[in-house]
Image 1: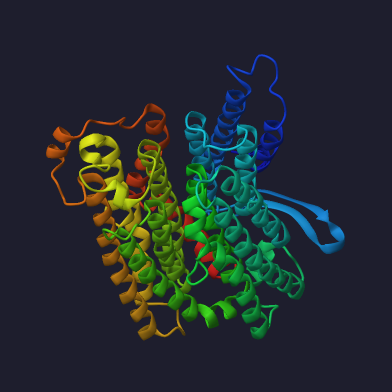
Image 2: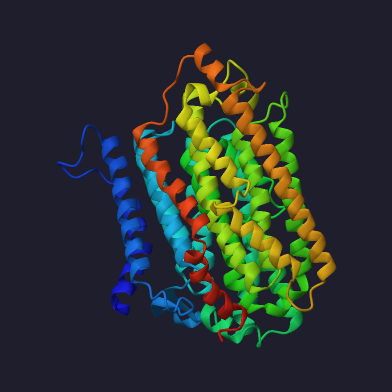
Length: 527
């Protein structure tokens, strides 16, 4: 496919959701109102996100897979010449999978919400915010200018805040405010770091700065830049101990908000580490990498222990909150891979990013389906003979929950396995100059985290699917009437995530073949 066509596709992918967000607030044209204005705007959301997904698939098909390290579909024009800021877009093997993941999850959320609209104000606002969120996220993965990256990074805060605050559940005001305050404070510090790199490096162009590989920045400048930029990105990742906004936001968010928050927004932080920090300030990253690894390893164990406590009978644990805390552990593997500063570790991080988006997105969809049926996500109320007992009452829903759990715990053959395994493998032999005994300790802690993860997820499956006392599902099926199992629209929204989780687990080379050449080039200073 020609460069011009790819260029137009990428511009359309970034711009169409923004245009669609504005159009969602306008009255529906005559003949397109359907049964009601609400149905028309929800159909508009499905149409726009579906078109963006189709364009992204076309971009992926036309992408030159033989040269994934080369920036493709580029647009580079002056925007604010006085400040040296350019409108620079492009895609390579690092960003392409994240663009596809973002467009897929947003479309599935729009499709799901068309049939199950969250309680709240007019659907017009919901659809407009969903599309604005998609535009900001796609732009974050496509822009190649530090100032544009910051603007796109901040764009997602507004729609996610209102999605939680206006369409969320109990505690939505607290969850929305904590989300905004944490991320805004981190962003202020990150902006200072980005400006420092751009001014000292003589350009805000991310490709040029990555090619320079920090040659124009002193060691102290690099350390300060990594601290500042890393702080903002670590909040979004989220890294322990900057994670405390996440459980409240997830617990309060509507289903679509939780899926996009876990599946896409968290990836913006780790993507920034790979795209900006590692290639532009390599010496600073090398100095601070052991501290990042330590926080990542502690976060893996901490997240798993909290989940074990939430899963315990009588603790009053919430299933959405448990999955939110599980993200702290899973994203810890991503950060651990990045901290090794090796191609294996960075590839592990990028693979785990995609796997987490697929699996945790599926889990939040499933929890939303459970809440629709039972009116609660409280584990104590969902367990026991009078609770969910999914194997007996809704066997397909129970089977999908069990599938999501075993995928999340890293079962070989599913997507969750490869990122975690490769991150620990990279920790066994980190980059030159990093303390191998320290990283062996971090690897051991990560291994402990995998065991704890298996423990709490199996407890959740036993309690929610079989009953709190481990009753056989056949006995429950006789005692309790069946509920609505997986509905057609749920099947349509969830099946792609199941299929991709299996395919990524069975054929990891499809993703690693894209990311590895680009990672090698980023770590090598564009060589």
